[in-house]
Image (cartoon, rainbow, N blue to C red; front, side, top):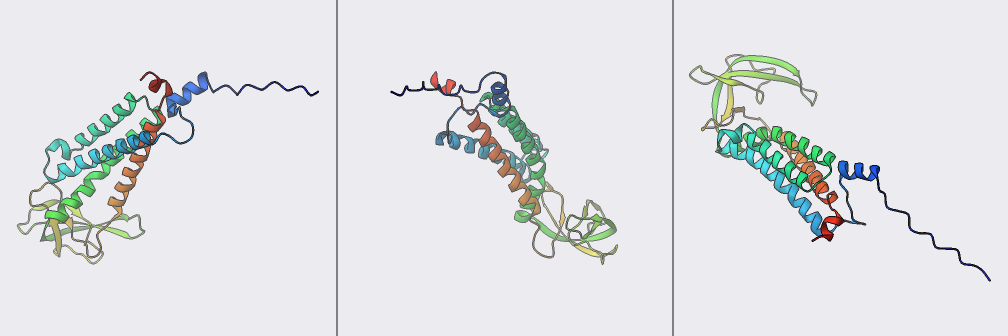
Length: 231
């Protein structure tokens, strides 16, 4: 007659200092398998609302908002609110830090894209006179970069250096087409001869997507069974 071997107990769950460190840095994520769908929706909503608030503050400031929006302070406040919300959920500190870094990057990228939106919607084109041409370093695509200092028809310098439309054949005294904001909220730009540059908008979209993913992951990994058990 064979004797049955005693059943081995299941391995104990990870506990102690390693588990505490993991939960503190990356969040406890106390669920098995895929996270609850409601938690995933909550995480995505948190990230999307945060990204919209940051980018929306910059675009609002460029369009018609108060100086606090144009300076980026409102965007930084939105980043702080998002970080405080994740901290209140006791999300992992590493993920909160990643969200904060992406949020600050988003604040820094928004003004250039917002200026493009404003100039595309209400910008007016006028002729400016080239005062000087500066041959700068090569741009990221390997082409030489030329910057033109320009003045309006009255001879008053515009205070910005124009890159679009400024090339190796441009000389002082030449006319350069410039698009400007009648309300003066964003600096003027040269009128591009071809398709408008999509690099800044693409970079903004990638950073915003990264913020949404990191925020959603922080919310999902903040899930605690002990917290739901007391409800």
